Length: 107
Image 1 (tube, rainbow, N blue to C red):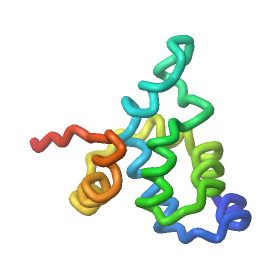
Image 2: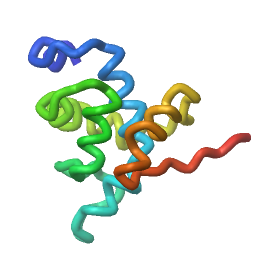
Image 3: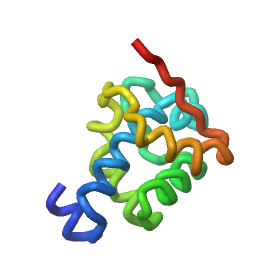
């Protein structure tokens, strides 16, 4: 993580938001992958719509999004946290127009 922040000066909060948002987009990420990609392993590349959403929501460059995904994809793929209320606004503002939607469950 330190190496990532040294190479890309985005804040830790941006990286944390990237992890939170990307972990909720597994279905959207898998949708564009070849059928040979195993669902238990993170794909090597993000679909363009997911990359653009993460760029806009996290205020990151395309290069930082790629670096974050390459560095953190295993962590993201195994993250099972619930969606925080503050992140719902990001999906509404930046994701719906790109066809990204997250199912929200309340217990």
